[in-house]
Length: 413
Figure 1: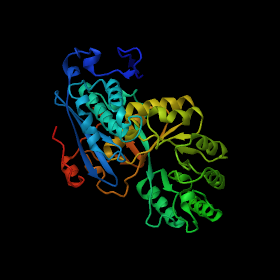
Figure 2: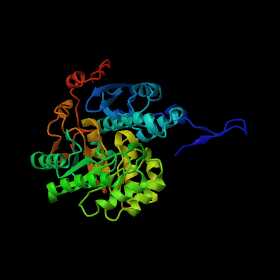
Figure 3: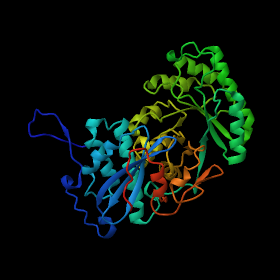
Figure 4: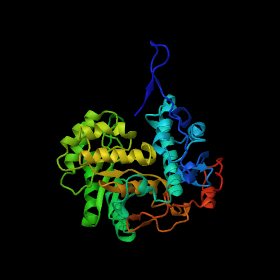
């Protein structure tokens, strides 16, 4: 909860109270590793299939935690500006430090956007630190474990993304050869029938083309895999309704983000109008506050927060709890390196209503090389490690090899 303190002038506006340990009178007299203090925050950006912003929190206990900020944040300078608010603080006070950063960064838009993504990376790293200090896996810090492994759905792409048969062939290949039983394709692809894509209206031939993709893929994989389709906020409300109705006879796991994210009323109408097609959304809103209306107004059948973007591990847990109140399952959007993916999986293991976590890098052959651990994803599942923290160890040589040009590698542990 945001706290406020009245200034001495009774006519003055209210101002946010500083939640640093110094101003709150916290002395950290707890003993042993629980007295650890943060000494530094560093970042390195890796040039993956997206630019992955890796974040490290250093402590005077010799323990270092690693997190990841959503690539769309893209601004390591924001994290650098947050360093003075963290150095000297106890890394175990995750909730308080999260709220402290939200308030300190309010002038830079901490209710959404780059500031929240930056805070997310720090928050994930704090969970890694806390798990290592307390010698427990990160999932224990967000409620304990419902499952030993998490289902992973694979986001697929082809060179000819508008060709229904090419999509069907790739779907069948990934299901058969890689063992995934959950996949997703883009549906906002050119059909060749567009007159004006800027108006978001789908003409009949455009809808027919999208139905061809849905039909080809779902029939190719049959009951071997669940298949979702992503629209990337591309269509007008009426067009989205017609599209959902047109694919109603096919076994579609969900239709994702069919309309732009700003207008919740339109989102709700599209979801209510879809006869049998589940509608998913949530990746493009921030924190539990951004997801509140989607859930309270039952504007989604499936909620899809992106953990390194939405506020981190505990914020995602809070969103999942809110979703569970409305019996809505959680399918986490994810375009991260192994660090952000494992953070998502740790939370997915700890919530009852997890459907799956997205994997977006199946065509990047060095994705797993970024960490020392092997076989992170096997047969469409990610096993949750019992090692402290996130359970992953960065391979700094690989990180350095794939750094964004001009960036610098963070320090060794």
